[in-house]
Image (cartoon, rainbow, N blue to C red):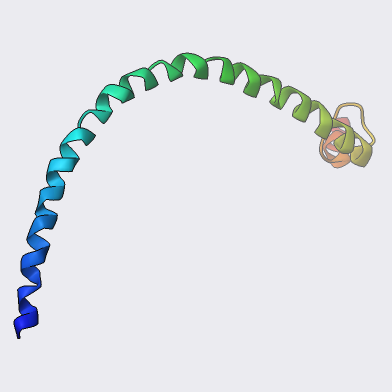
Length: 84
């Protein structure tokens, strides 16, 4: 039962909140983070450049399958068009 006195030692842990107060200063450091969006603007430009080559790449395999310059995924599509 005397061991039950150990919880009393846990009370000093309550002092930890005092250390949490400096954490409140962290928001001040978050303000510079707002400048990051400016750097994010160039990122969209890079992403745009990426899809362009990707689109041109698939056209090659698609054309090889359908064998049609139209770039249709399935040659059958053009057959339907010819029926019209």
